[in-house]
Length: 283
Ligand SMILES: *[C@@H]1O[C@H](CO)[C@@H](O)[C@H](O)[C@H]1NC(C)=O
Ligand SMILES: *[C@@H]1O[C@H](CO)[C@@H](O)[C@H](O)[C@H]1NC(C)=O
Ligand SMILES: *[C@@H]1O[C@H](CO)[C@@H](O)[C@H](O)[C@H]1NC(C)=O
Ligand SMILES: *[C@@H]1O[C@H](CO)[C@@H](O)[C@H](O)[C@H]1NC(C)=O
Ligand SMILES: *[C@@H]1O[C@H](CO)[C@@H](O)[C@H](O)[C@H]1NC(C)=O
Ligand SMILES: *[C@@H]1O[C@H](CO)[C@@H](O)[C@H](O)[C@H]1NC(C)=O
Ligand SMILES: *[C@@H]1O[C@H](CO)[C@@H](O)[C@H](O)[C@H]1NC(C)=O
Image (cartoon, rainbow, N blue to C red; front, side, top):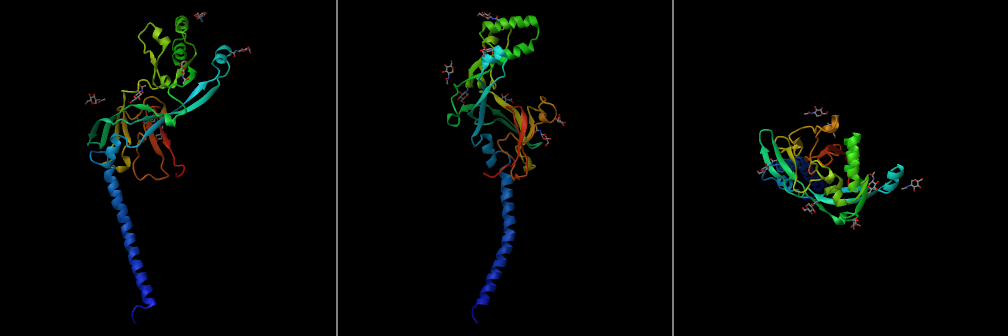
């Protein structure tokens, strides 16, 4: 009879069925192997793939700033007009490029603690201008002093110091000064030992963020990199209620096997609170 058409079809069907069964077995087995490998490699301890990338972040992390530039400072001061502002940015800095320090494993609760040294390098190609761009902004020192010391006599003294230092309600400062610090001429005249440097993120270079204590994922991979404590505490002791909570990771990484339906929670020490991200679209 040899191999007629029917026989060929049957053979084909049998081979197909066998392969389908194997496929049905191997797919989960393959998935299991992959999952097992991932589970092993994402643990934050010496020797894993994740650890190396975690100690010194492998990807580039940027922080962008937009500044509100006051357009009518004279009108506001003279005539109490409403402030008009123009948003300018982005000004982009590369951050978190320094290796973590003081990395200490705690096998008792499967955590690892570390310090994240701060550093920021200006990235001109991702910015609309330079670090020397000028902005008219509220003079924080002058505005705050009147608020902190309502006593009329003290205010007279402060007023004369403000006048003497040629400061006023508004000031013109460069981006670099606003973010990283400048010596305030008014505070420099105050006859008490006060901090005379003002800046949104002053001091930054040569400082470190933390101590962070995060789960290393050894007991449960779904917890890897999630913050257990920040500066030894589970709450910030700064905000009221849920804003005060320290949630999720530091955003540099997340536990594996994330579903689209999951809310990604993370904590940013620069804004001193936790925020979250929800899935929007593939890109
Ligand atoms: C304040 O208002 C007056 C009267 O409307 C106007 O003449 C003057 O130019 C204003 N001053 C400033 C600094 O805009
Ligand atoms: C980090 O480690 C250095 C050297 O071991 C030590 O002097 C320093 O106190 C540690 N810093 C913190 C915050 O633990
Ligand atoms: C901080 O250090 C970086 C180099 O790591 C440097 O480019 C930057 O100018 C420094 N910033 C300040 C405000 O000193
Ligand atoms: C900002 O202002 C300073 C002082 O007036 C000036 O020297 C500098 O050139 C200005 N920067 C830019 C980018 O125009
Ligand atoms: C501030 O000082 C100038 C002289 O530098 C003076 O003309 C002015 O009246 C002073 N203003 C106040 C509020 O003391
Ligand atoms: C942290 O704050 C939340 C919200 O107010 C509260 O439910 C929780 O008990 C606090 N945790 C600690 C450790 O204080
Ligand atoms: C922190 O997480 C809790 C529980 O998921 C949530 O109720 C709270 O709103 C979160 N807080 C912040 C600041 O995201």
